[in-house]
Image 1: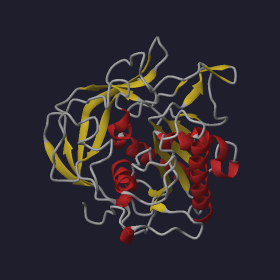
Image 2: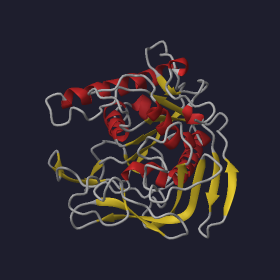
Image 3: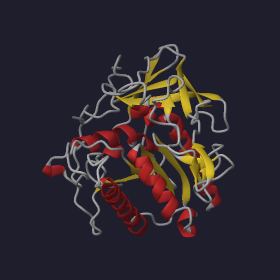
Length: 364
């Protein structure tokens, strides 16, 4: 285990705050996995390596509110609020790089484990999870935000929860929307009307690195999705009577076209037993090794948003440098889902850095 990282033992469990919220990550909290070491081995396209120690931001102008995916091994319909090794590891993997550009808050929430899928209890499990996220959000706004700009970051179930939060608690709430910098919602089917905005009323996809109040979302594959692909296509072609399609915002080139990915993966985690780790994720056929907790591939892969004839709107990723082959996990229907955030974390960190600068200049 890495020094300073909780494995969920009773001696290192964070206590609930005055509002009853347990914070997996919160500035100043001991054993915070969102401020884990950022020592990184950088691999250039020609294979050359060098080491960088990225540093946490000092008093950044924005906060990041991170909601993790369904990662728990608990067997109930909803998880409890105990921090298990899986939550610690996923926060290290997906959230800690953003500490370079924001204060990271990550609540524990009563995640929908999927155990009730296909049963009469499914709706109830989803509602419990959503209510838990909203409670944490309200606690954050009331006790920790202090008028700062906010970036929402999620993956898979976390992205779905934050999309609902955006629609119900940000989009139509001017006092909150004025602080909304952007949202990064990867690995979920985020829909927009083909004719323009929606289903959000005022929030659309990001189209430049200087735009704020917008959303980045994508589902990544290495090849055109087949008919059994799980992500990237609406389950219904219409929403409120209007045609919809999945959002695909290319994190390497928000205005469109093809760009180079800056991909980061953890080679050392509190537990390797998470879907997106280097040994369990899309690099598992050739797990990278390094002397540092992180390995970064600069410009080793490129990415393009593609809308297929069958209605999939996805991020197609190609290997172009001396980097590992990416393997769809657990099979081709899932594509690169388990590592959607890590494919482009370097690009996303720089996007938040740019957006934060714009937000700060507009709110002086």
